[in-house]
Structures are given as structure tokens and as C-alpha cells.
Length: 213
Image (cartoon, rainbow, N blue to C red; front, top):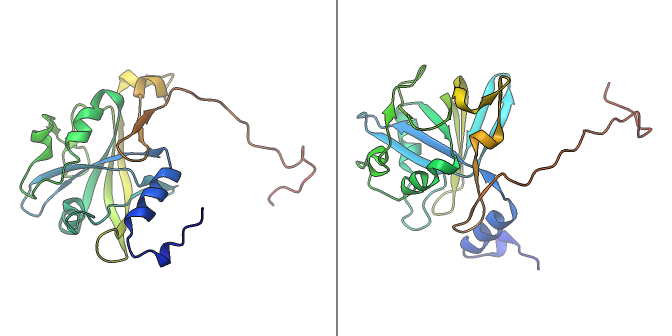
């Protein structure tokens, strides 16, 4: 099977194939504030770390394929350039899913999912009080990619505070079993991290190859 995206008149098959190949994906459960102070909460599975100095993360909200609307999250960031990423975990995945609905801009997803809008430490945006780990961020840059349904944007944010619940720490490090993060697969499927294995990074000298100078 070969699919050439540029030859497709419909972006949906491309989206379905991409999301079925790029999986599992971590989930950024993002809270923002509108210009009028209305909280918004939504999950995004196009999410990752960019670098550690400065500590930077990225997530990518797509333009709605059903309505053609730009996500409220993106509109909010253009007005209030701060956000909080909650780590999506198994105990809260149903509430996270509730917050994914395409609600009107005046709907408070914290209330829909019956979650606590708790005060953050370094940003004005509220965080999910029930979550186990948070990244408080200030917007660095928004890069728009494409136009219309199926297009999106890359949101870059500098992490200004990290909070982790003591209940998921073992010897000062996050215990993945206690955190119990969930990942996004394709369609309506999610996964947990239960089957794991370790691999040591190869040593170039042991392989008879030059290392980086």
C-alpha cells in the first residue's frame, strides 16, 4: 500500500493512517483561560518534550474536521499566553474524555467533567486539582501549519513550574506504575503502560565505531 497525501482530495484517510502509525501517543491535557477569564480544558495527543534548556514542551491542536473551527485552546493562548499540561492518567481518563467534546466556547469543561479548578503556582491558568502531575507553561511561540479542516498549529511553551504528587514518587523519582499514564492509539482506543522492557544505549567503542567528539 502506498498513499501519496498530496494526491488525496480528502485529508481524512491521511489523518487516519498517520494516527494509526504514530502510536501510542502521550496526551497533553491542557487548561487555558479565555480573554474574559473563562477556563477551558481539552486533551491533545500530538504532544511531546522539545528540550530541557530552556525546558520546553509542544502540543499541536488541529482545526476541527467536523466544524472547521479553530480550537478554543488556541484562541485562548493568543489572548492569555499561559497554559497547564496535566498528565493524563488511568484514574481520570473518563473525565479527560468528557473534556474532549466540541463544546461551545462558554462551556467550562472543568464543570462538565466535575473536576476541581485549582490555583496554579506560577501561571494564572487553573490546573486540574485531581491530577497527579502538572507542567505550568508560558507560551513561547505558535506556528500555524496549513489552513482549513485538518490543518493545525504547533504550540511551544516554556515550562516554568513542575508539580508532582508525593504519592507517585519513589526515592525521589516518578514511579510509572503509581503515575499510571495513558496513551492515545487510533480511533477511540487508549492504552496503559504495562508491558515494558529495557535496552542500554550502545557504546560506539564496543562496536568498533568512532564516538562523537
